Length: 171
Image (cartoon, rainbow, N blue to C red; front, side, top):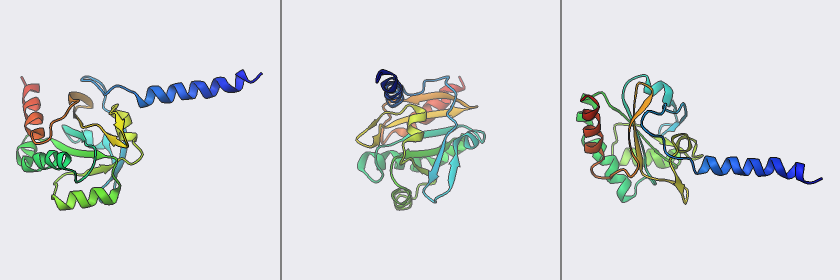
């Protein structure tokens, strides 16, 4: 009679396995209604952010590492072009609020960095995690839907990729 006790546990483990190995959100999917804390300790509700205009949500593995710094600086250095198109930017990693604050301040990023230490934001977007780090992926949201994604996001050309994709949406 141990089978009835094992069955719920097995089902729970199977569901968890499906959750962990979820596929990244594809173009046309609704944007997730999830949030986290930014580098200043403020709670950010992405659903509210998405109502204010097109939004790039980019995931990076680790704050203040070479590739992640190049990616963030690409967006920072092209901030005027992004803002001219009305694109908001939000960076996300599993770093702590303090690590995000140090990274944000060191490189004077003009956009928020979310501390996704519990992995909920990454999971909502279907971003794979490895060794406690999110895979480098980017999602452009417009009108509550994913309109573009880059599942192997670039580092130093991130802004150019986003701007090109955004321009192509209008065609």
